[in-house]
Length: 172
Image 1 (cartoon, rainbow, N blue to C red):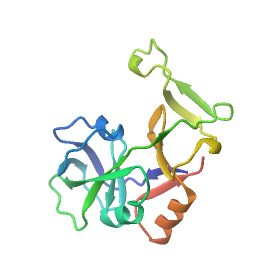
Image 2: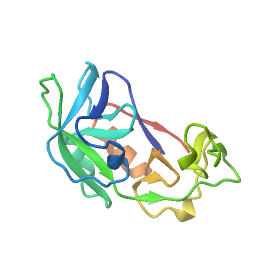
Image 3: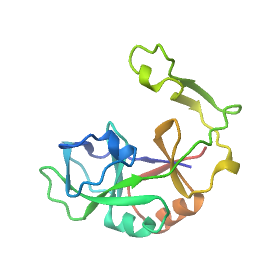
């Protein structure tokens, strides 16, 4: 199950840090400030737009904080007074589990004019299928395509049961 988000407001990057480090779980700063690009309704789950870093409410955090491989950094949203407390959810687990025989995708080439540094990694998926025999975590990023966040069916059911807002799910 891929975890995605509804688009109500739009969050940009975090001031004064390399935002890609949040995807690679290489950041340990606290009290981060997120740029607000477009205001909107407060959700329990959303992401920062170009980086796909999950921003979660305290309710969402409490629901999944015992899941292995996660850490949470408090964040504030620039120029917005929020009712809820928010956290950047840092995902430390990455699993190489794409079933390439059943998936349809493109990969970056070594001579790619824009991202030659990503040669061999996935550029995009038209159809994504996973090899479930390689999955041993309930929530993780896809190896070689770290913008995709995969969650288990049990976490999805808990999110729905607790009526948390913002999360959308795509079957893979």
